[in-house]
Every structure is written in C-alpha cells, then in structure tokens.
Image 1 (cartoon, rainbow, N blue to C red):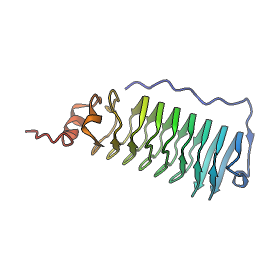
Image 2 (image 1 turned 180 degrees about the horizontal axis):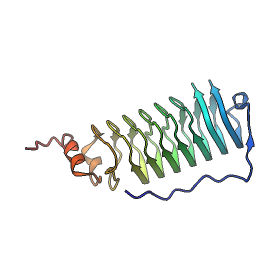
Image 3 (image 1 turned 90 degrees about the horizontal axis):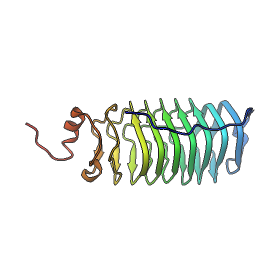
Image 4 (image 1 turned 90 degrees about the vertical axis):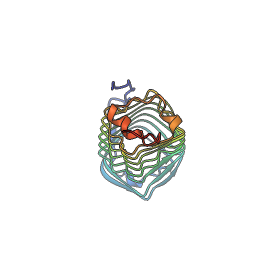
Length: 212
C-alpha cells in the first residue's frame, strides 16, 4: 500500500512558548504557540480555533471543543482520550503518538490529516468528510466510520479489528497491511475493497458464505 501525499503543517520561523495554556479561554483563537508538558482540564470551547500550534506531551482531561477550526497543528504524544472535537474543520494537522481512545471527530471536514503511531480505538469519525487522510501504524479497534464521505484515504499497518463501517464505501481502499478481524460493514460498502486472501476469508461471514 503506497502512502498518499499529504500537505505538511506550516509554521512561522519561531513559535512562542506558552507555559500557562490551562488559563486560556478555548473560545478564542490560539495561534503560533508551542505548548509542552502541561495538562488542559475541563475546557468547554465553542468555535475553538488553533492555528500554527504544536502541542507536545499534553494531557487533555474532560475537554469538549465544538465548531472547531484546526489548521497547521501538530499533536505529539498527547493524551486526548474521550475528547470531543466536532462540527468543524481540521486541516494540515498531525496526531503523532497520541492516545485518542474514544475521541469524537464527528461531523468534521478533514483535509491533509495524518494519524500515526496513535491509539484510536473506539474513536468516532461519523458523518465526516475526509480528504487526503492517512492512518499509519495506529490501533483503530472498534473505531466508527458511519456515513463518511472520503477521497484519497489510506490505512497502512493498522490494527482495525472490529472497526465499524456503515454507509461508507470501501471501494479502492487497501487494507492488505492491516489487521481487520471482525470488520463490521454492509455488503454494498465492501464492494471494491482491496484485501488479502486471508482477509477475504474472514469477510466471508459478512456475505454469509459457507466455505468448504
């Protein structure tokens, strides 16, 4: 499976270090910052805008961000489990080595987004539009992709057991480097998916085939 071309985040030459990010109102715009080794707790933001920021080793605890606008952002080694980031736009953004268990990405437009070496189990991407989005070496067990509209999406070396795809076309999506045991999808959605012989045998149960 070939990697897809994704635009990288763009930053000014020098970003400002921010040591008290927990004091920020996340209803406002946060731009041109480097935030490291902190905890962000109990934030409830509406219209949260992050522009040209790097978050490194940050714990997000019980945070809800709606109507988001993330552009040119890197999250590195962050714990964003169960964080809600919905109803907005995520552009030229990377999640590297992050914990995203149960994270909610519903109803977003994602473009040029990379998830790498991250735990995305139980994460929800339903009703989103994904363009130039790549998942690489992630755990996406029981991840939810319901009614996702996508263009140029790639899954490389992921563990995707029991992932759920509903009304999401898998045509031309290559799963051959991934673990997809127990993948849950409707028969029409599976048409044109690229799988190995062994994966096809596992998917046969969806088709109610009897293999002798």
